[in-house]
Amino acid sequence: MKRVSLLSHLRDIIILPFTVTVIVPYLLYNEEQGIIPDHISLKVVGWMMLAAGATLFFYTVFLFDTIGKGTLAPWASPRKLVIAGPYQYCRNPMITGVLFILLGEVCLFHSTNLLIWAGIFFIINTLYFILKEEPTLYRRFGEDYRIYKENVPRWIPRWKPYYLKT
Image 1 (cartoon, rainbow, N blue to C red):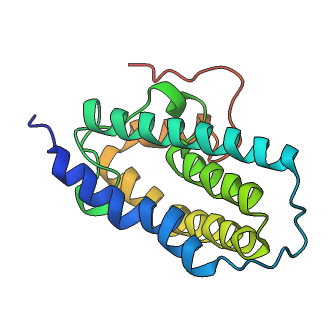
Image 2 (cartoon, helix red, strand yellow; image 1 turned 90 degrees about the vertical axis):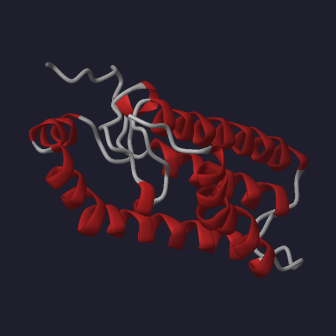
């Protein structure tokens, strides 16, 4: 199987997660403090969440490329089911990484607007997964996906890694 080009990955990252984590927060940011205090401990937590989220995000993009032979975008989605690394613990670690980035920004910029945006992002993705992505994955990968879905939670990670029995 032919690998996806670096330009395709960059295009999809700019269109989707860059828009969600940079452009929308920039447009929503308001210097008013709101309900989130501007405290050094929150800034440290924010940097830690941002770093963890970015690491998780880029690792899952790498897995989509190397194992799945696709990108994060629905128009160039993986051709093989990815059940490795963080996907052995929860079904949506890439979105979890993006959510961590958003929550890190909330802590760094002490922005109520960004907290609301993170909540909206989470709700939109949950609905998208239930209504669109999961049925599509079942049609594409069949019983392997059904068994994976039954054994690996959508958001809250398992304690032990899941291995698809072949």
